[in-house]
Image (cartoon, rainbow, N blue to C red):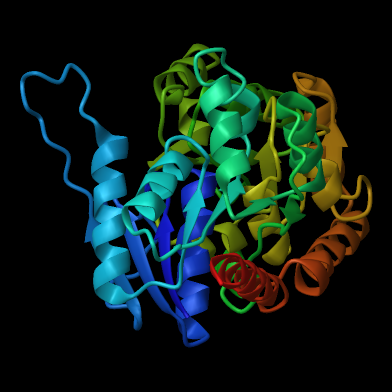
Length: 379
């Protein structure tokens, strides 16, 4: 198939999933075209059967805000027509679904189907905003196919927007061959300068990620275990986390790495992943850590309980309860039998339920269903 994919190319879950989905589809023989304002952050250069088409937005002085959604729609239509795309797959409802709908209408009488994948804040935050509620509901309902990354998000979408259309749950996934435990490299790693246990956090550093909780967790953990915190990513709360580390005299025990594209090389070096988020519709970082045999200590919110089984392959504690989260970290780092059991279970969960080899065929099947339904409507 020839598939057009649009996502936000920045450091965030929806863009990462969309990028890796495209690369996995290309590896399975499909032709993939990314249509975005910038090259996605995890897009490997020179990937076979993967093309990138930049969306250029006019900065004409008349426009107070550049009309990105219109430029995107035009580019979608151009690429679809020139490369004879079979469908568009857009990630994050606003504004990508509306742009796809406009592109579809520009290409009439041919009906180019488009699928919208809901990732989380497009529903729980942006879409629920009064200014965007009606257009988000319209965009979802006009999609030829709708998927969500967790059962939690599917239910939330139905509750918030009253969507009557069926929503297919296709979870996030991980390449289990790329993300693997590597105890030998971890033993030789210099991520922790003084040989401490490595705690890691990976996110876009938005307020919802509660990155400063990671610093407070480290402070509590270090009362019992020599530990070093590695913060991967960037965003609005980056400075706040740095400042708090200095205030608590922990700056020597925290490393800020900024944005990293090769997370699969970093995660196996960690002992525990910290994910203290206020909300996670799925928890991609937790899944990637689990595939590397790194137990996640996360919060009991959103779709995380669908991924992490408390006490079996990770731990889930209440949002903001840094004492409880720190206690779980200490428990893992001081009980080697417990650690080995949970680490092995985490890897096993990732391999048996969330490997790309299991999840990508579900997308392929859904693509075929949507294309067949659209062809029947057109006929």
